Length: 130
Image 1 (spheres, rainbow, N blue to C red):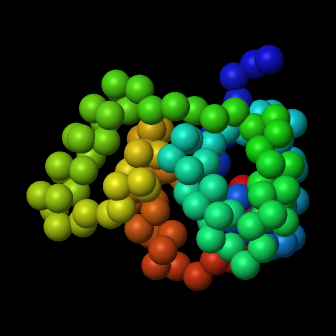
Image 2: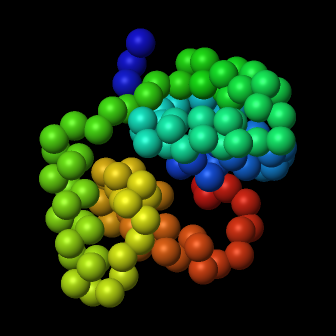
Image 3: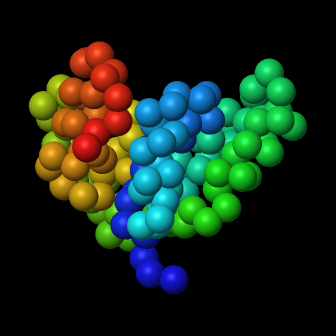
């Protein structure tokens, strides 16, 4: 199997599991190219399962979604990038959540860039990106 083409954010999976149709549709389009989640995102999703109103049902939905999705671990290079980004953001007074930062692997402008996450939080959700 080829390497997954898309590292997706926890929020996208949550929206999909909550039945947000445009997100579900977009994820199905991307799935054929290969989807991945960071280990941190998978941990966040399991937390949601364990503390949901119906953990057994939620577990089934998550396990179905995760079948065929690659989990990407955190290696030394990601840890180093995390440290540089976090330190830089701290100096600028723009610190964001640690878990969000661990997904920042692709550089400025990507869906996983901290500046993008801050912009996303400030604007109204208008559907999945192109």
